[in-house]
Image (tube, rainbow, N blue to C red; front, side, top):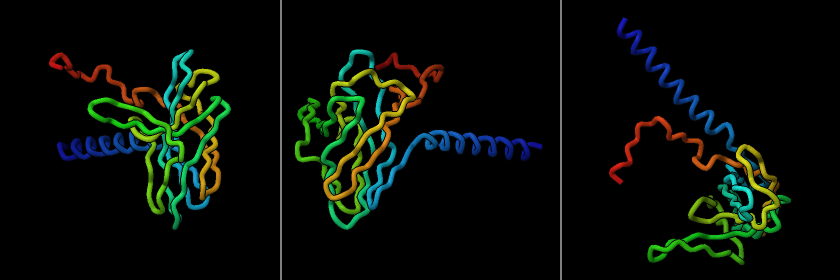
Length: 170
């Protein structure tokens, strides 16, 4: 009987891990145009009155030659620019990439927090969790792509309540 209980517990554990993996990946979108794939385009919600939003994604160039992300556009913002955040001497700084972002042949470039990202400037309204923001992504050397930024929770969907974490020593 103990073996049956152990087997049942292991099956339930496996199913819960699988369900967690499926639910996490069920919302990740992937777009492909020619040799370019954009995976998991997303953004964060913004409070009312905040004029800036962000855009993140993975861009894969499966082609034989380099391409450049030169711009993006959305009806939800007056302008979209490409930026890079860097840490130098303990200070985080951000600068626009006026010549675009190179995506080398055969490589993936990740737009993520504290790295490369899109700045959605002069938002026409707040970005709300759960909505999708249409975005046109423009390349030099590849076709223009239409994607949607999924506005994901600030906590990445991970709830910390009731987890028994003690931060009193920090």
